Length: 373
Length: 150
Image (cartoon, rainbow over all chains, first blue to last red; front, side, top):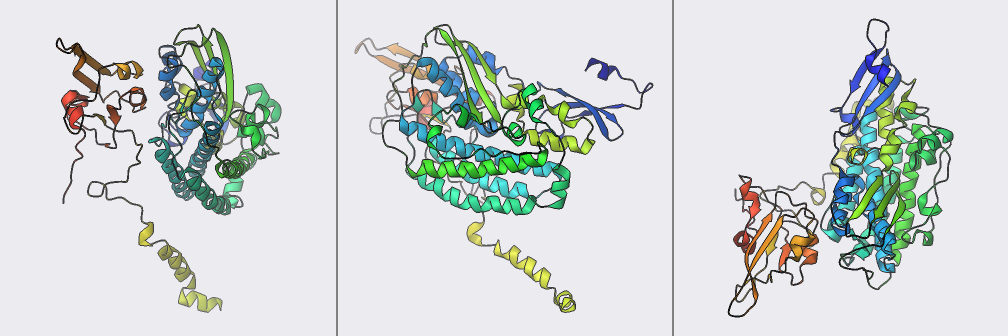
């Protein structure tokens, strides 16, 4: 994209426009350099790193247990999923497995977190496209989920809910009850959102056939999550490589056909419904038993490397850890879904109008904390 | 009929009914914060406290330094002194830098005697940077939630 920055105004009618880093629709501090021909977008170049904190390097300087609060701060909208991925990776390294009760509680909390993350996406995405009201409703429901988190582990956003080997906190008494009440209430609320948006003419015309990313392009970019599923690929790590006991639950993988922004909206809405299905099954029978596996207090995993990925709300979230036998990881690499999905932005916005860039950034569902790490 | 609807503002009344249906005082969620305290979860991780024996007033801390080792930010400093008479380690100073704390709760988990505890207090503002570094006395006294009376 070097030639883009050098483009002068004398030899063309192209205009280079900086969108962000203080643009409300870039969901944080993303800067997009747009090359424009009038209202048409000729190319988009993302400038990232404004929120870089060196999380991977911090990981190399902390013990395995000490690093677990930091992973919450990458994708802070879905901190529970981040924690689960990290704990699973270290558990695989230690050859330990969380007990059944811990696994079920983990599934409940991560699925609640998936709904919370999708609610933030829906609210802000609708806000970007011009629908003001959904955000009030989605944040109202998210509040209920955060209350469950607060009751469970004491924090609402950066939860630090799981520990390596299981859970630190015993599930509080009304966890199952609260979850089921939330499910009942929320099932009706999704229909409410759909009534507001799904057949809304403005909503449909803003989203349909915008930001198309076909199956082969998804695979080329390594895009995962709802974007890949909207392109018609039935790929969900919860089904393909089950972890934390997901194979025991009955749920479907929603897919789209048109691979456009509207289909991605429908896929995420259906995903929330499937999460409710999983939550109902999980909350109905939480087994009794211990919540912590036998893991050493001072963790010195054997020399080796491990890659574990989970289906985070935004796509495949992977942790690659290299152990040299000491108390600290030799190398810790995170494969964040937002970072990799964001690469496809240039492909998706080419040829669209400048107003559609906002819709496409919204549909990728990025969290800059995770993109920049 | 259309004319009558227009004349009697039926649409307006319908809309206002929906509005007033949402005005149920039980559903008002706004907290009048300083005068009305929010409900905090029992497991909330807030201001730290160093527990003392309620009867004798002596600290429960045994000076084992495990919290300082568990802390990812290394913000706890514990110093101890060996009592020449009883040959036991005794706590002398204990500092906790709340400005760097992310309230992950690892120190609390590490404590073998439940001396260090993260309480439900969340008002941590201070006027200076030094004020955020809490010494043993402040930690033992525990948080003093401000009382705002109007």
